[in-house]
Amino acid sequence: MPTWLTKTAPILLLLAAVGVVLWRMPKVELGHSAAFKRRRVQNWLPLGLTYAFLYFGRYNLSAIVSELDRAGILTKAQFNELDGIGAWVYGVAFLINGPLTDRWGGRATILIAAGASAVVNAAMGLVMSRATGGAMTTAEVHRALLVLNAVNMYFQSFGAVSIVKVNAPWFHVRERGVLGGLFGILISLGLYFAYDWSLLLVKVGFAATFWVPAAVLASCVGMAAMFVRDTPSAAGFDDFDTGDASSGQTETLGVVDVVKRMFSQRVIWVIVAVEFCSGFLRQAVMKQYRLFAKSIGADASFVYQNWGMLLCVAGILGGVFAGFISDQVFQSRRGPVASVLYGGLLAGCIGAYFSIDGPLLGWCVIFMSLCVIGVHGMLSGTASMDFGGSKNAGIVTGVIDGFVYLGTGAQAFYYAKSLPTGPTAKSAAAWSVWPGAMIPVAVLGLGLCATIWNARPKKAGASGH
Image 1: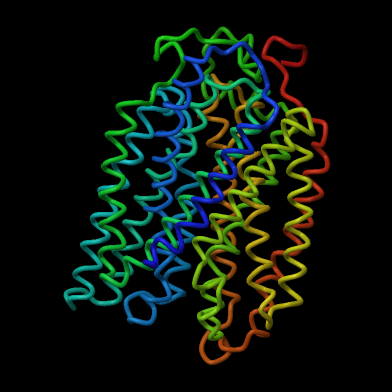
Image 2 (image 1 turned 60 degrees about the vertical axis):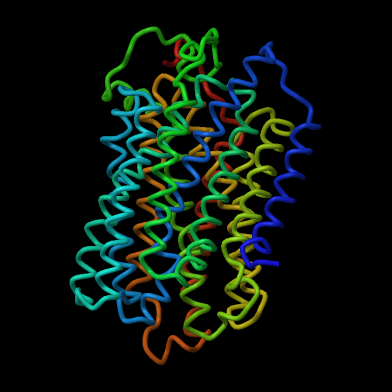
């Protein structure tokens, strides 16, 4: 059986099982017609696949950094530097791209994101082609990738904002738990493409790991343009009251007014703090584990060899679990779900710390990925709609997701300075600082989640707004 099919088959089987579970799950009936539900699938599926493939064009560089380091093209320290800068560009870009998404609509901005990322990935492929041909020095490659990665991250930041902005008018609050689970599944598929496909493509050449995502994203532009519409009314259906924080809001608010309204809610302050922690933990797992395993000689392990597939499976399970318990157990509240998953994150951090030199560590970080992708889907993908409202989804999601990437940048710069280098890096014990730094972050995140256990969105016309 071909390698790609061996890695894909478990994901396809799991997605089929998830589809059966979602089909048999008790439905939240809100009076939608069968035609509306079919058109909604036609809307969110191409949108979601475009978002998933944006991950393919975002994490492909981190997927092959060990190979680039071994080839003398880009060192681990150089990667962490450009990755940290890119993450902070991504986070700060939301201050611009959130308002632009609310103004232009999510359909326009997802097209911008996919199209621009396709162009930048093609340019990065050209850099790799020149580097492997000896036409560029290591320093020149580093400078070029630093700039191109930052540009890519700027346009990539439209992605999450766009998907939330488009989906918000199509889904009622009571339906969004499952939607948050689907958001986590899409993230997981994107990570699979980025990590496992990139490792297959790198055997063809470093440039291929960028040119293929560029081509895929270019095709996604056409698919999204054909099917995606911003609202039900734009697709020939009636708009409806989604029951979120902008329900009852008739006026169009400016950026300052939206931010004031947003931060007048204590729950938003808590969510952005939790998502800062999530950004730190999520990338500390996904971007540092493979560097760790490669350094200590554990790159023949099952977890390392199937990293993308396992991240995908974990994320699918985490997303479905989070969506199910949110809508079916906790009456569409997001705080309890985040609390449960952060408890799992803390357990995973502690397990990783005490198994740093054993085979259990790989499974601890996979479990942590399950938990953190579930949290991210619930908070950035769902709570941002609930507490920001469909009319203000761009700005609110931008602010929340911006804090995720501030946390991402923090971990990149911290680990760039603290992780072992040289001969010391071959010792697993020297890497204990890696899971050790995650433990207090998980404790903080769990404590914050517990404070919003009973939080629900209030309509714009309600008292207190």
